Image (cartoon, rainbow, N blue to C red; front, side, top):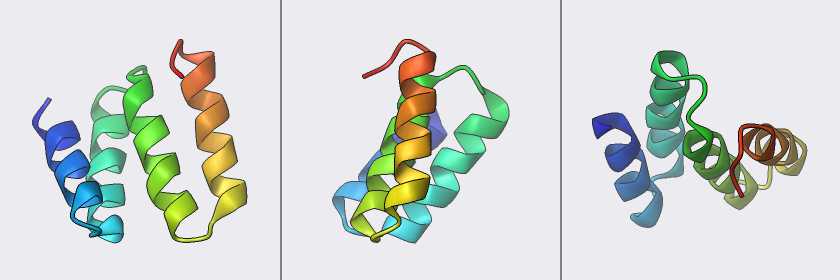
Length: 66
């Protein structure tokens, strides 16, 4: 999934807002893909947006993820 790879790359480069946009695109296209919820949560957590991050971690877990 190209958007997931791009989002992960942006995340590792510290370009968190851009990574979030990519993960949003994956969620839009494949709403059952748990990894996007998890990594979007990590990016939000790094931005200090803990409540939003926890919601995404929970959704990732519901879908069978971490």
